[in-house]
Image 1 (spheres, rainbow, N blue to C red):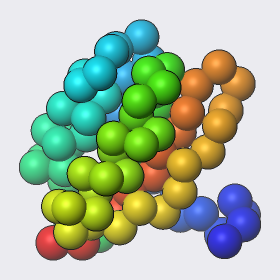
Image 2 (image 1 turned 180 degrees about the vertical axis):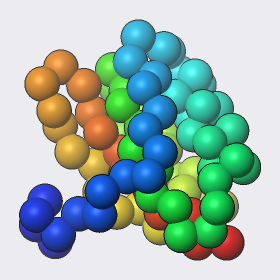
Image 3 (image 1 turned 135 degrees about the horizontal axis):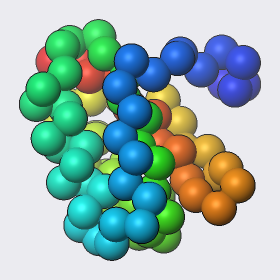
Image 4 (image 1 turned 180 degrees about the horizontal axis):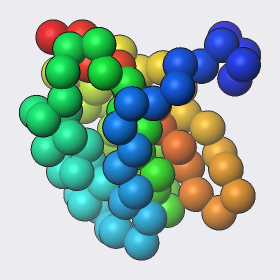
Length: 82
């Protein structure tokens, strides 16, 4: 999938500067508040987020759209499917 095909997030969670498990906990809170079909983007400077968040997304039954390296942070995009 190219970045051009990436859906525009309906929710952005800026967790830059937060350390593990902060970004994941913020995503979990965001997922609980989101509607099915919403696309959430997590901005994280914590290196563990690139592995921790995709593992949780799979376990929780949502869809990982992508993990992108940006200028100084990672953007992890997730779709809420249930």
